[in-house]
Length: 202
Image (tube, rainbow, N blue to C red):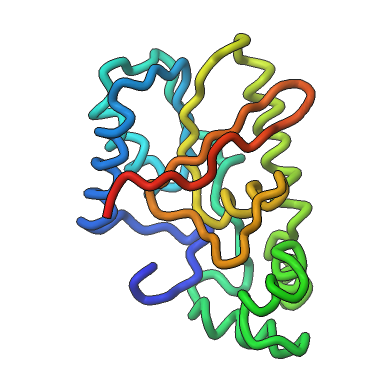
């Protein structure tokens, strides 16, 4: 679906050969990292990534599970449609050219909310709905974790970009690479971006 330029939120497909190779490269790079817990979105492309990375870890934690709270953003009516065409239509209704133009002149939040407002079914997630979903997931995770735990969370690009934006990262032209690694420190006081979008593959 990525190669076809389709909006891929909750619509799910298995990874292709290149995607699996990217996952393996990241798994090898993380091989010596100790994780107390591994979580993935319940979408199968995230589960595949999680399992591919686990194959390379020297220490595999006892706790590994899926959580739909960390799914990709839901694009509602626009799921599976041509992503560029979606954004051209949404942007032009607001006097812009495309998604990047919206972000440059307004914000990532504005783009997400424009899609939400223009979805005739009303189901495309708004910016605040995505961030609230992330906060719920982190609150649940913290309730189960011990101080100092390292958690590997396998989730999705647009979801990660939205959370990064909410944590103050400049997301203009700055989309997470497939199988990239972003590090966030979380506590009861909130979340802090440590590193965004480290890439381990070509």
